[in-house]
Length: 424
Image (cartoon, rainbow, N blue to C red; front, side, top):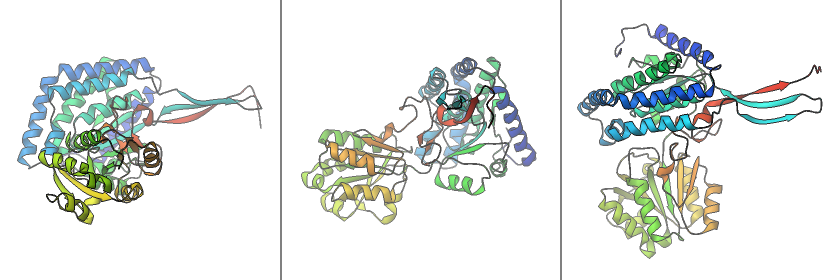
């Protein structure tokens, strides 16, 4: 691994892109069952090399603690036995899915006899830039292989050793299945100039997908000469309606906020209908959150009913805390809740708790979000939970893909026309 500027960055990045492009072109002719065999080999490599993965991960954790990483970031970084098994299982689930490549999206015959088909095809070479979570290395590689793409992976320096060990398992699995290991390239320098250079390689890299904090994503968008699918912040909301079931509301709010705080689908703001404040439901929920160590930041109406809450400021409504902090607001009606979410939310995941069908319908219709949930935790906004096996990210864009992106979202399409000598 090269962690310092001891290489020619431009040549190095060009070599990665050219190797990936050559491998991608060969992969086009590889049948789906061979790609699936490679994925199962990769899953096997992850399990067989569990000790090596955890040894590499221990180096990253030691360095992270020394660098003062937060507990949430260290949690994201940690590879336990359970998480390694989960990584392998995700790869297996992706292998078991229907092959998206070659799917006929639509087809019809024109009056002149020409038969048209709109067919799914790989995008080509994908650059994925991510932070903290080493499982993204295997997830992203598996999704790209399944969808017939080559991928260049650039992880954060905090996971350098873990990513290297996982990428080696991926390459070994590809080799075992007889595929070109250059299908999955890992950027092994921490020099930030490499990201900028890769983002300039128009015509050699087809798409960039950044996964990480807002500053990373904005930097990628500003530098890119190639298309970018963005996964912006997860400022997720739960709205507890006047018609909410009490125990359901308690369970969902606690789970959405505390089950795992350092992830993008954790709730950052809870909105309460004013009736829940007067009925005592809001107080019960806030009391349970407080007992679990959540710091509450509320508006004036919230603090009238729950004095232990700190005063919220305007910045709290748009904040992605990724920590045991939650913004709380009392709203007069569902319209105010929807307006608040559409103003401050990040179009990631937003949930309503209600027994009113009319309120649920209004919420999912009018909230501008990639994932609109009724009576379930925001924590289910996840590729694995959606049955995608894993996700390349949760897109908050509106073009090409939105929400958790699986293998099918890493394809584009081409039109195929079959004629019998027709001329125009």
